[in-house]
Structure formats: structure tokens, C-alpha cells
Image 1 (tube, rainbow, N blue to C red):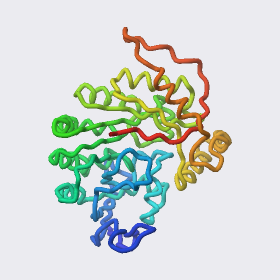
Image 2 (spheres, rainbow, N blue to C red; image 1 turned 180 degrees about the vertical axis):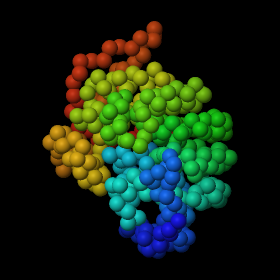
Image 3 (cartoon, rainbow, N blue to C red; image 1 turned 90 degrees about the horizontal axis):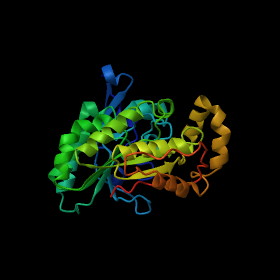
Image 4 (tube, rainbow, N blue to C red; image 1 turned 135 degrees about the vertical axis):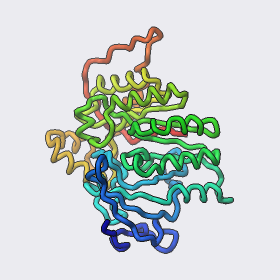
Length: 341
């Protein structure tokens, strides 16, 4: 396979220099073109300097440490907040993000070394906070599986957020891990409308398959919540649409449900509005009115959506309440992160 020259990727964080800013070792990255089920993807092999990454203290995230074995994501979600991370590597946030997947091939050995360090304080670790740890490439590289094994061996608490049914491959391992440490899983299921899902997250498994996976995870005795996210103006924000998702995931056994509106950070916003103009130009005016110049929508939707999640409960006899008359929710709130710990 042709080799990517080291200067073809940025090797340091854009705003840092010196060893502290290094992302990868001097190992020359190799380009592997996907075939078969991986056709259309390119896997760029790199060796990470470290894989346990500290979340900035200024972040609103409820966790302090993350692991991301991959950069880029084959789910190709049009709204993905991780798209700007590809720009740090000199790759584009559009097609490159969806098809050029950076694989940290030494992730398992690095996490084992870092967990064994005397400086490590056995803090909880979150996965799926950047790109999906069970995206398509995981079927080839098994890095997430090795990381889960390593965390469990070290009895280190962890959580996983995913859209992928590939997590079921590791179900037995996750059940074993939960006997050694705290393991919390969550699925992202933003809609049950397959047409909307195919349009906005074309590389992810269909929502109904995620529901079935949720049932299997819960049947195995594992804690598993759901993010109904993101709720997209004009596509998935009708109250009956939201109520149907909440009702379905509760029936499937979700241990928590959080409904989260669309949030567009700089870098993501530009890509998303370009995507919108190409695929749903009829919704462009609505989105521009909702967002203006902001990353977040006007402040009220988080409480409104939270109320929808709280009000949709399964009745004692197993019957579900009827969804309310179809009405659009004004998506106007701030991003809320699922409390994975």
C-alpha cells in the first residue's frame, strides 16, 4: 500500500509545541484501503504518544478522562461535534472525517502502560466522547475490545457511548467487566424514523437495530441509558416523534433517558449548514432563525425536552400513554451531556 509521508499529517496540536503537544510518535503512518465491508474507507495507522486524555477543567463534561482509539467516524453523522478534530491533523472535516479513519494501532499497549503507572489515580474513563468506539473499523481492529479488557483487568471504572450494535460482540466481556468495576453503557438513538436516520447518520445501524441491542444489553443485566440526541429542527423535533422514541427506549429497558437538542460548535456549524443546503434547503431558514450566530439555540428547550422525557412513562399494566398531538418543539436550549458517571 502507498505510504502517507509523516509531513502529510500534522503531528502536533495546532496551538501547542514541544513534547507536550505531540499527538503521535515519529512512526510513519501507513495508509490501508478498505475492501469488502470496509470499501470506501481508508485506515491511517498511527502510534499515539498517549491514549488516556484529560478533559480540560473548563469543560462542562461530567468526566475527567477519555480514551479515543479512532479519529474520524464512518457513521458520517452530519452534525457530529468531533469533525473539527480532523482539521487538527490537516484533514478536512467533511468527506475525510467520514472516510479517512485514523487508527491508533498501539492503543491497547499504551492504555495498559498508562493504567499501570504510579501516577494514575484510577479515575473513571469515558469512551465514545469523540468518535464512536464501535464504529465500523472496530470490526477489523478490535481496539475497543482490548481497551475494555485492559480497564477491566485494572478494575478501572468506565463508560461507553455508542450508536453501534457491534457492542453486542463484546457483551460477554462487558458482563465480566461489570463484576470487576463500574461499567455504564449508553446508546444514542435520536429518532425512530429510518428516513431521517438514513439522511443524517447514513453509516450508523438503523434505530430499530439499536433498540434491539438495548434490549439485549439490559437482558444481560448491564446498566444502559439512552441519549435521544440530537433533536433536529424540522426533522425529529415534533413532540410525537420525541415521545415515540422515549416510550420505545423505556420499553426496551433504558435505565435513563436524556433528550438533547442539536448543538453546533464552530467548525461543525459550517459543515452542517453546507450539508443542509445540499440535502434539505427547505429547512435552512428555520435553522438560521433558531441558531442565529449562536452555537446553542434559544434557552428553554432543554427544560421542555426534559419534561417530555420525564412525562413519558410506562404504565403499570404495560400500556403506554398516547403521544400528544403532533406539534413542533422550538429547539432553543443548550447542549446537555449525559451523566455517564
